[in-house]
Amino acid sequence: MLYLLLSMVLVLGVALAVVVYVAYPHRGEEMPVAPQIGKAMRGAVDRAPTVDNVEARR
Image (cartoon, rainbow, N blue to C red; front, side):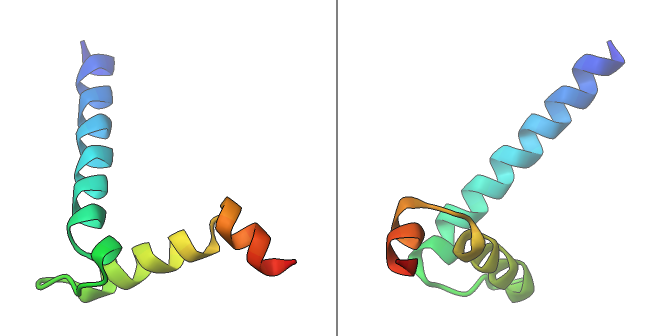
């Protein structure tokens, strides 16, 4: 039962992070309450190896 509760909390946390990212930093807007989190999310996405980033590095 504890495993189920912890996994559900983790899933909800990841879902919340995705919703917050799509609502603000992905569209280029600042987060109204905590702009530091938006900058951190944007920086993490810029550092992630995606097809666009790999092609730009060549």
